[in-house]
Image 1: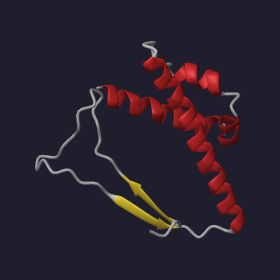
Image 2 (image 1 turned 135 degrees about the vertical axis):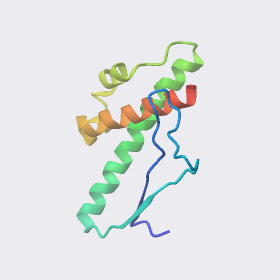
Image 3 (image 1 turned 90 degrees about the vertical axis):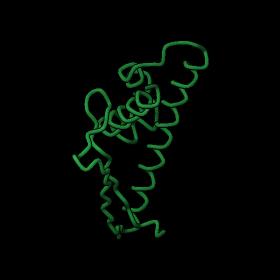
Image 4 (image 1 turned 30 degrees about the vertical axis):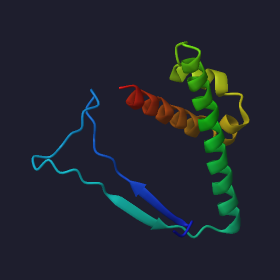
Length: 115
């Protein structure tokens, strides 16, 4: 696949109790939007930098949660991780808004896997 192609997938909606909202036909449909990106060299470098920072922050936060799990401790909350990781280079590179959104997604991933 061309690395410049970005695929966005919509997931089925979930209720507050994490059960899926289905139509009467009980069919589940995913919608994919395919976007062809044509960034300049500078934009491509910036996108690569943001992608790498996102991966580093995700791995740092996930490692903290896994270590707590292995040590039979409570996993850190979203707020605790934001506070603990705010001085990390990856957090600073992404900026507060994007970094907090990433940590929120990690929290959601852990909640779904624990259910």
